[in-house]
Image 1 (tube, rainbow, N blue to C red):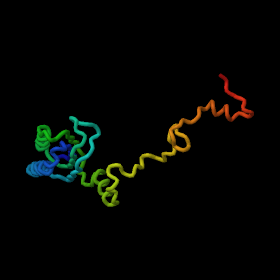
Image 2: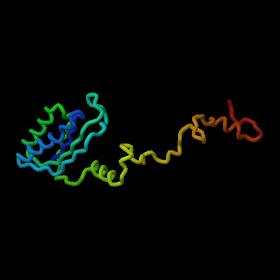
Image 3: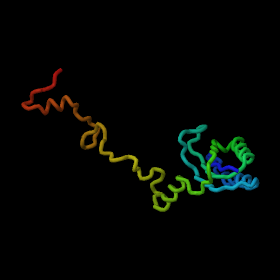
Image 4: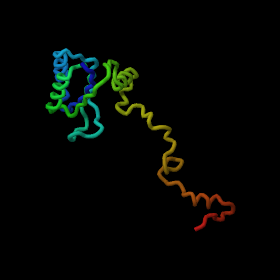
Length: 164
């Protein structure tokens, strides 16, 4: 038997059916002497791009150890279930039992008490934000003077050093 990582996303209108789907897949795998090493229900999340005009979906991750026949049955179940928008099955070298980065992030967020921030996080990716583009010192939207005007004003005696 080989190890696989399976991710499938379910239409958000069918989210209440996800536990029953997981149980159905679990019994199918266990009935054929397969094993589930990791099962994570990530819940409803934003999609990177809309699929059939749907912007959110319910994500589930499983790391399983099954034979080829069981894997074919599982893939067949994904293909012909209208609630499953997409699925991905990747062959793995060994069983993965550690929490995924998604679950580690979720656990650390719940431990830190940052639930009030929502999906925005701490916005640490924004950097210093000192450079605000062509705004003046006060942050208003009046453009800074062009370089030629600055040189003309800075010349001694008011003489212009620019050539036209």
